[in-house]
Length: 481
Picture 1 (spheres, helix red, strand yellow):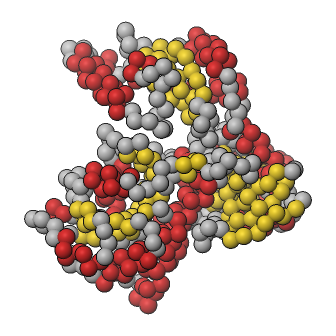
Picture 2 (cartoon, rainbow, N blue to C red; picture 1 turned 180 degrees about the horizontal axis):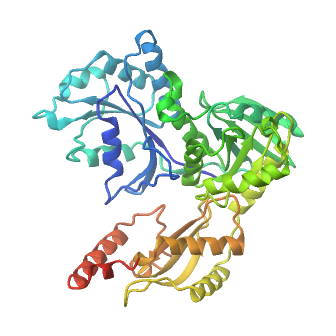
Picture 3 (cartoon, rainbow, N blue to C red; picture 1 turned 135 degrees about the vertical axis):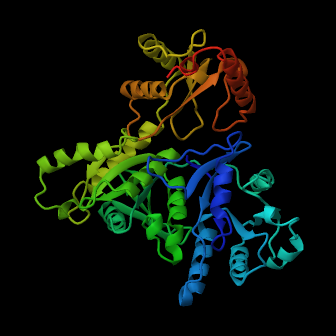
């Protein structure tokens, strides 16, 4: 089973305020949760949440006049957004009359038959937005927003969660879905074809549900595996006109559909920042990950020594996913290609591993006795008991206790490292949540699925009390770290 989050794409001509809208939503501390994946990830895409509903928010490049390629650019961008996104926001300016570009964007967005919203941005530049002027675009509902004053943002988000599908689980089946991702020309399609041809029996060949994700179903070791091949992801500044502008949307769609992702990097061009960004996106989505060095046959003077020398350097560049296995492959010679299926199946088994609650609590007592969590005087965190979520496709654990607000991020890393040493979980991210026991019911509230308003209010009140208690103390005592 795999969880699929809906995708909301922001489109429009240049300078209408798409990026400002994107940032205004993600910076709303009281309700929005946005975690950027990877250390080098730019601001084009992020995971957001509003009133229990999670979704991907994608900020697209502005549509500009591209001379004779203008019509092609408009059509391809909107069609790609329609294919991959669940909802489209068409953004216009409140103080600018409708332009020909606005009309074309609106027409193609409506043609997609996806839910389309008209966002009349920069409403602070007019006394009162005249909705009648924008009715000619044929898009409803229309919402006026002001990103500088954060007006209309709540209304926009309330409207959006009423139409996007709830994060859902795919129908249960035993099929393992593997997505192949990476930059252009790193060997994704060649690996896709090699994997399909090497196996015992091809079950089905078919085009994907979107124009960008090619699929084939194969059988390996008695299990059906679906391969997803995606177009290359380019760095934002290098994106060409046309469909490449939506490469990130296509990547997100493939990642969300997959159980395990192969992140390809060219053996002749290692340690590229964009490769790290893609790995971060996969981690953020909670999917299994294999770091694949492709084109190993093209490396001059390659031998075991070279590989053993390179592997630690590569792993150092991906220290934010230390649990991801690294493998060197060649689609030309077939070197280690079949092993990708074996690794993917092993990772899938790790993702479905379940640990009994009594065993988890014995482990928790051992690691906390060995190294208790630090905290303020009289406010040291106390971790009482621990359970594993049974309905989450990513291994996820809830730890209940008191003063969990003060658990430092390094202690979370300590727990994760020891959890992996004891139980494995190779190749997959794991999630650890700290929950205040006295503000939840017996079995707690999952931060990924439930309304945490009570918990957030409790934390906010506690911070305020702590600040008051420390008004007459030296500044450094207010932060134990």
